[in-house]
Each structure stands twice: as structure tokens, then as C-alpha cells.
Image 1 (cartoon, rainbow, N blue to C red):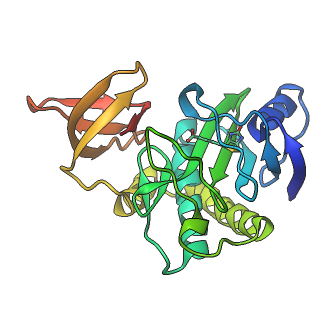
Image 2 (tube, rainbow, N blue to C red; image 1 turned 90 degrees about the horizontal axis):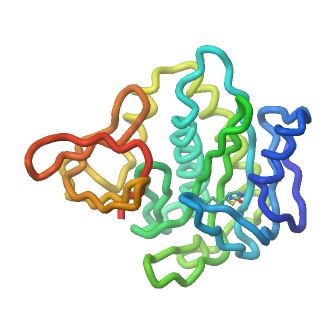
Length: 236
Ligand SMILES: O=C(O)CCCC[C@@H]1SC[C@@H]2NC(=O)N[C@@H]21
């Protein structure tokens, strides 16, 4: 079930509060806002409140035997990839960038924020359907920059349907299958030079050496041949 609201602070904050309050939040239910006045991004950033964009969250209840909760990031990224690909058709090139960015013609289209709350993961997704912010530090795009974007409700239906399927496959199949699919759609191929902004705020340079099979962490080959495993950060 998808609940649409005209405006809220943050759909992630709303669902996190509901989980904390012990309210029953069923898997498969979504909260989607037409406007967010306190949208949260990764690493403490704010998320752009663009009218006509998709801004929504869902909750996954972690069960015994589930994979590491952080790997839900790949469930979300693969779902947005498919919904965005459905929306743009042949109109533009959609790709993935570790850990969970969806890129359109090489620029960021979507953001995904996972927040752990009392054995639940709140998965928040923002997709620039209609408009993108104008940022000095990096290029952000919207589907509307390339093709006519789908109506918000149609996109939300498609994304919720694909997410449910990907979540089931996260539970039923090995993580390596999912990581292989992620890598096949990734903007960075094995050996590509990359610069990573890690969780301590440091920039580390090296080449892309794949993903850890156990949890999807980034493997970075350094200039001296050593390998560094990065669990939180951004490729810049
Ligand atoms: O910084 C990023 O890349 C992640 C951005 C995640 C934004 C979405 S919009 C819906 C949900 N509610 C929030 O406050 N944030 C997420």
C-alpha cells in the first residue's frame, strides 16, 4: 500500500518515528511525500525538495537469517535502476554507482538513505523525476532533462512493485548474485581509476577492485598494490 501525503518533514523520519513508537509498519507499505521540508541525505547532507520528484520511504523488518542490513542498499539501487529505466526507455543511459547511486547519462539521478531503527531498516529513496538542484560541486540531473517524466503515482507504483520483487530475491538468493547484477550495471568497471571520499572525510585514490562478497563493501586497489576495503563512503 502506498500512502501519499502533500507535505512532511522527511518520509524517513516519519517511518522511523512510527517504528520507534511501536506502531505496526508492514513491509510493502510506502510513505510518499509530494514535498519534504527537511529531507535527509547521506552523510548528514540535506535532500533537495523538488516538486514533482519522487520522495518516499519503506520499512524492512530484519528477520533471523537475513543478509547484512546494509546490503538492502543494493535492493534499493537495483529497484530504482529498473523503475528509472522503465521511465526513460531508450531516451538516456541509466547506470549504478557504488554504494547506491543511480546515474543518468553519468550524473546523479537518485539518492538512497538507509536508517537502522530497532531491528528495522527504513529505506528512503529520492528520484529526480521533474527537476534537479543546481549544485556547484557536482552535476545532478532529472528524468525531465531527457524525456517526459512519468506521473509521480505511476512511478511510485512501479518502484514499489519492483522493490517487493528485489526484496524477495535478496532473501531467497545469494548476495553474490545480487552483487554480480549490480556490477554488470555499474558505471565503474574493474580496474577503473576512482577517488573515494570515505566516512572519515578523507579522499583515497586507487582503482576499482570489485565488491566484498560478504557485505558488498568497496575494494580499492592502492598505488602500492595493497587493497583497502571501504564500507561507507562515496566515489567522487
Ligand atoms: O544523499 C543521498 O544520496 C540520499 C538521499 C535520500 C533522499 C530520500 S527522499 C525520501 C527519503 N526521506 C528523506 O528524508 N530522505 C530520503
